[in-house]
Image (cartoon, rainbow, N blue to C red; front, side, top):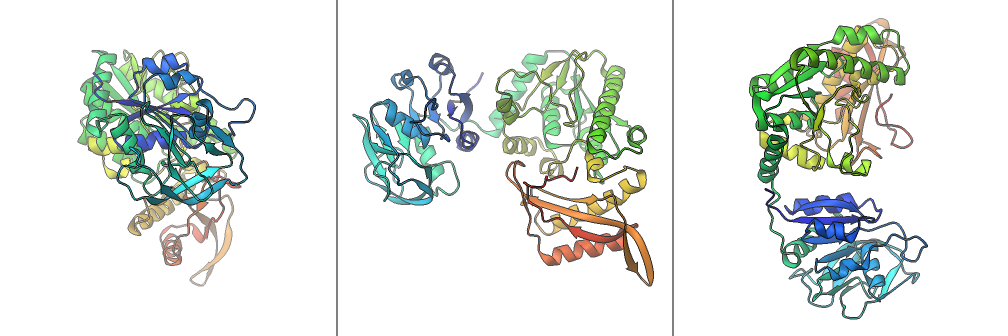
Length: 512
């Protein structure tokens, strides 16, 4: 039985909706994102403790501007409108929103001018983050104005009796210094939520849900060694123990020590029934002579599926359920709560339709940071929980050109040095990714008194929040110097090291 309150975040099309939902969860209150097209009756059937309207890119005056059924205001459920959401509240309830020519963008000083449950005993002046062209010029009847800025007379408004609130700024972004406290005031003091969405409760509920779904049937899981599949497998194992068989398809394209770590963690530490399918020769054979990146991905995807199918049929032929590491952002993107599109374990293409499994998706309500926290709570090693994103096709797409055993070994050794030194420098958690790339050319060099004709290695290190955009990481010059010296001295066949300083866009994070 769920023992937590739920707050619904209505998505009006801003990139902020996911961030709002995450901030609510950071306050230990469960939140879900819902479409603005969801009928109010459906929203209320979920018995939410509160409803938050997200920001949005449009003006409330534009034709076809996102709206919501005003019946929501009569429901008795507390409402908080943020930015566009606040303007919508004001406009729908009889206030005035106008383009005054005094839009606000960026850090702005806010002054609290009246007592409000939202601001509690917070300082009367605070820095907030604004991003709006339109402004609320006058509040609707029954509302009081609780905060203002130099440019905007109505920066926060409320009808405390009906528990309807609006803020013109973004409390969910880090630049709003007291933003999380403002959200907590709404959640705890206005909505009466209790902070019960904790790692312990998440794990307990997941275990209960898995047991209810699976019963006594057998379950199979494709392990990739990545965070999502590892945490999903650990959760399902906690729920159903030896009913679970994990298949680890070892492509031979993983980083140094990863295959051993997966085996050690799941077989020895957790006692999982793990089948380690060592298929490196098969993958390399199929990749021989292939240089086109898309063909590489396709070959790896198809080979992965064939190996998984064969092993699954041999070891768990009567399994009825398949574990997937689907996360909440995947569910939101697919736009439906019951997206049956199977996301492949290796992101290398879906499993075939004729594999008649029912899906077990224990992480489908979680964001990535929550998945990592669950992994830590379950006792997974830090190296798995905090593993940087790694492409499904593995090192094959970090070798530009032909993938051969010799070139794989060069890249694996160089990459291990990059990972080791980045960790030693304490930068591992600050960077989105840091890795080595082997490019398909040779260069002239001098080692000792000999001329060499060997491979260059490119180091790629980026910072990012979501991989949609990325900037190259400003690594200290001493660290770059150390990396170059170590790679050239310790990796046979390498005589030059370069550092990639391309942002995304125009480049991609991976080279292929």
